[in-house]
Length: 180
Image (cartoon, rainbow, N blue to C red; front, side, top):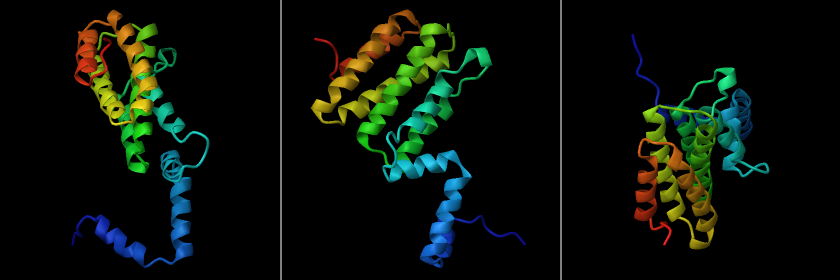
C-alpha cells in the first residue's frame, strides 16, 4: 500500500493541532537544522545588522569562486539565494541590492579570472536585467546609487567579449537609465 505524497494541506492540518509551546519548539528545531533556515527567519523578522549578508555570502561563493581552492561556479545556487530572500521577505530594496551585488560579484570574478564560458556571461546579462527591473521598481531617490553601481559594471564589461557590453547598453536604454 502506498500513500500519496504529503502536501502543504496535510502539514497545515497537523500544525493546527500543535499548541503554542509545541509550535515554538518546532520552529526552534527548524532554526537549528540549517543556516538557510536561520537566514530566512532573520530576514523575515528583520533580526541582526545585515539580513542580506548570508545571501550575499552565498551569491559571492557561487559566482566568484576561489580558483586557488578549485571551487566551482554555480549560477543556479547563486540565483537560489536571491529566490530564498524573496521568499523570506522580498523587500524591493533588498532584491535590488542582491541582484546588483550578483552582477558586482561576477564583475569581480571576471576582473581577475579569464572566463570563456558563454553561460556565465548570459547569466550575468540576465541578472543585469533583473537588477534594472528591481531598481526601476524603487522610488527615484533610491535608484541613484544602484544605477551608479550598474553603470560601473557596464563600463567594466568592455573587456569581456560575448557582446555583454552591447547587451548592457541596450538594457540600460530600455529601462531608461542610459547616460544622456
